Length: 241
View 1 (cartoon, rainbow, N blue to C red):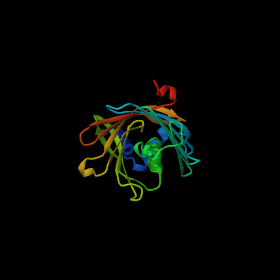
View 2: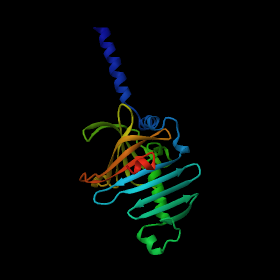
View 3: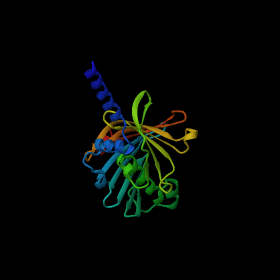
View 4: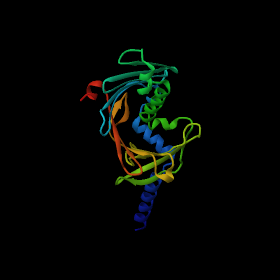
């Protein structure tokens, strides 16, 4: 009986200890799952992304990222227009339907400008670089990991904030407690107002041995209103299916 009691104590202690990951330990395990060969920092590749939103036509994007050479390009097709935007070592260039000659009216109406291109570069490299991007300078990882139920599923939840010059939103990242796969993330501008959005991740695509979410479905926090879904494919041919 005594021996059995001590075995139970040991097993219980092991279980509790295993659940007491720090924030940085959880992040490291998640990165081990998504980027086991540490390929993100040297990423050179293409992402083919289709955005599906209610009551509008699909937007198809070919995103090229070359992190070592500070290169980013997007080729976006929606309706009858194809806009190519490039940032190479800080310099921007554009074409509209293959032509670099774009009137100012067209630039304004289609939001063709360097500021927007830089914003889209940050958007794509951040979201598709997660959770690895949580190692970036200015990122504050909460040391306490919370176990929480979200949409009837249990997760290990990591809270992330940022230095003021980096960003002011509060983010929560939800990881599968068994595999450490990232399955949900959520952000608030002002958490007391329940604003911001949550994003449900489903299925995966392996791009250069990095496991990235295939589907990202966006919803408002306040009323669960569906906003749209980004669908990632490996090739342009699959994107058109």
